[in-house]
Length: 76
Image (cartoon, rainbow, N blue to C red; front, side, top):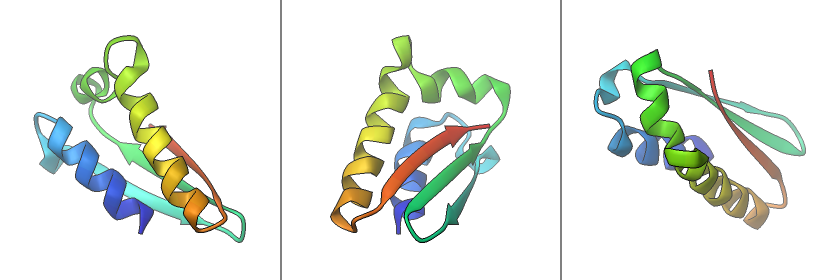
């Protein structure tokens, strides 16, 4: 599952992984993974210039592409 991939990545990046909740919303053509985290974790997950979240989104899109779907990762 895409949720498992994103959860693995995010929880290994976060300083306090126990404070992070990840939810997957799926329909026929797309999968959306929502990351809920405290404000102090957002900077770490986004990364300098957004590089970290861009890399996570790229991996998610590649994984979903293998299954003929679209993917989106959001930090809430």
